[in-house]
Length: 297
Image (tube, rainbow, N blue to C red):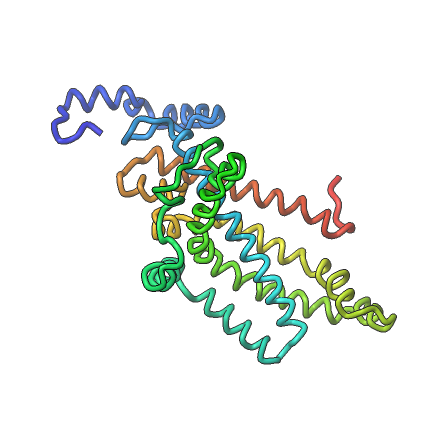
């Protein structure tokens, strides 16, 4: 923090200012007190409050994770259900092979391949940043998609969305595979239940049986996977945001590690862990809506 020209006296003064000259338990107690008040300390590099750094980076990460989760959920659930309905068919085999490949491929490799093919070779999509540099956008909430809609700036909306496509697909690769495998497994289990045979015996159309009876009853394990994956997206965003040079919480954490900015690292990790816990709480609450037999007193 002092640089190469810092003296021993400067170091002693800085340790005193930071409270490092106090016993460890006193430092920890002060840290917990500040944490309860939402104070995560100040960045070593720019002396800005860490909470402000996270607030500035969080919208970019949320845009990426929400779009990735929507993509992963729609594709994964649809692939899993179709695979279960057509069990042992070529569709089923191709889906499971695709799921195996999706789980096996590293996120950073997928990102670089997408950049190479769709960005560098074909030139269809941008490969870095959140919005084109030549596009002007009035920032209100720092959620670029929302700000584009609020200001009716459709050029900015197109640019922001196009910058999200490749990183969203990259981040969704592993969750798509996991959701597809879980959807297939739970759908096969539900298809063998007596009430499904009864619904078919009554002459209900197959579409009604699948959408009304099979889908809803197979969703609880799938929602669990979706919730866990959504919470872990912040961790996966570290690699994705670094590869695509997106200014989110993941990239903030990487920059903190590279710059030995310990308050930023600590604050980002606490934030990611808290977000993960919050998402799991939301998933637990959703159970009662998906299955009326589950209720909380």
